[in-house]
Length: 624
Image (cartoon, rainbow, N blue to C red):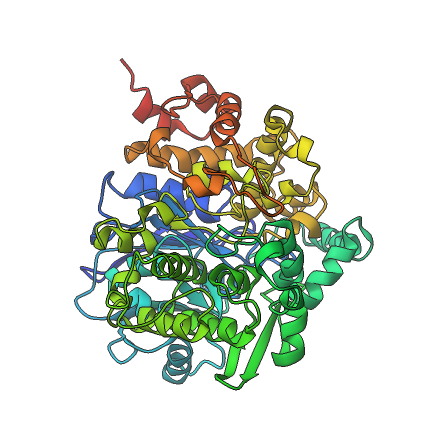
């Protein structure tokens, strides 16, 4: 197989046994890689209805065909497991260098089951693989762990996928961290790994693999560079090179896209004009930027390393907060002018291995509840957690990270905390199937509501469809759901291809549409036709959806907070009166995907049309 290492490693932590298998070529061709390929493996190897935190559950670290193959902007791997938050298939995407490093050891994926008696890490090198004692690493933060692994293994720069103390204690906000501040952050993946007493997977090898047509790949890479310099979105590419996701902070605040006061406020009405740029990457770079950061094989380099020498907090080495993090620890909690708070909370979450989006959403929910008298000072360890009290916000984040006091209640997210406190504040939860949401409002981009509520891995703004960008059209267009239905399908297909091929999602502007197929064909030699490429992503989406069906999750079981679809509608600001009809949007999507409008079960005919889904057909339509 071209552009594949060709092997998959299975590890049983209960017995300590390792098993190698050849990569299933049919599955690789059908599902591309990463999350969808990982879902196919879980469907085959993990029994249905397993508790996500039980030893029998499986977690995968899965590469895409572009990882380390020389393709530009294709370093991303995905973790896959069953989410402890809602029982859905949990795929979480991460950049940095782990994906290419894993493939240099001769493996395209690692799947882990069981639970070790004591903390371990998986060491994979040219010489083989082994479980090594991680007792001295347990309890260490991410930077401490990286340093200790470098010293122990004699490696100058570790490319480990690891958990921090958050994941160690099973937090549903736990992340997998890589390159110090890159995160596979969503759905509780870190907590699942922690339940297995697994601290890290550390690949360090030097194996090489061949691509199908290196000359063609280099030619496509040249086209990509030219597209970024001279294409219709070259100004956006230039901005991303400088400031990354933070380039759109001020615009999102003013358009209503960014959350303000736990999604009930408005950047126009609530944020003073002089503070509307304060947490933008451009402004924070002036204060803190030390150097740029780029993931493996990326000519854009949208990241940066900060050094914060502030009045309240001093941080020597931290990643620049992404837009989601700046919005979450900024206006969403009533912080309009204090970038130190944003950077300190970002640093804490990265070091303790926690999802910044989930922590910020939980913090904003608790702030609203305390400000409205629903949670008391006693509930929050005497901390006056009112809007804009940034010192109080930092104290709560510290408690969550260190699992102290009320932090031990909040560590599994806002919905779990509300249940703990007798469903207090239940009507103020802003979640999708229990997942806190990133800083993109479906009242601004109505088509996003379908992705947030009904993606098989719910609550992710990045998982496909028209998404956040659909808000940047005239009002009469954005609420015309029927006119956008076919485009929603088309963009779902495109983003699924990008994610599962190992591409950065920002290739949506850095690549022209045909470049995905050109890169994958040049690397793998699968020679997908244009017609095939119109449905591969729909197959990968359906694989994840049908995993959830196997687990007993039907359409009725997916939820999205009323506030997020304008129930009741906002009365002020740019989103006043906006009420997305998420069910209408999903009906359109379901009809095109051949799914029953009530249950979400796809027809046998549609499954056969998409191909590669015989395992699902056998379960849903067993031979009579």
